[in-house]
Image 1 (cartoon, one colour):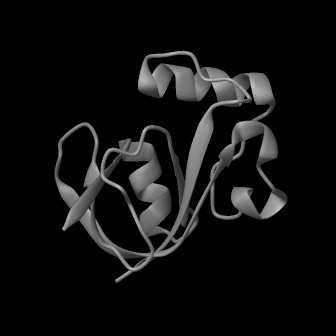
Image 2: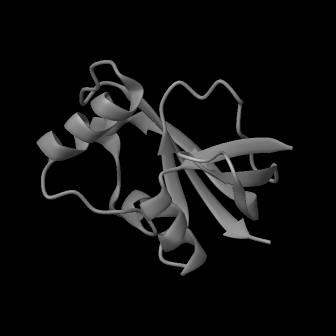
Length: 107
């Protein structure tokens, strides 16, 4: 089973059903539709839920569509979005960086 890690604050949104989409850069797990996932709290590595991948789409950040934001936390600006992902991945993220949009459903 593949795993995805989420910061504690995001895991709480997932459990409430408010977060159903995650964006990933450099997907070393090759997440695909119908994959079974173990969702882990990033800080503790403890599993907090299981999920199934409903859809996957890859595009540069500049080509994100409105529906890609459904079920995802919002950003006040593109600048904030790029800074957030640059911090998460510890490397520069720009409008040309490819992002994998993963929509999932809790089991």
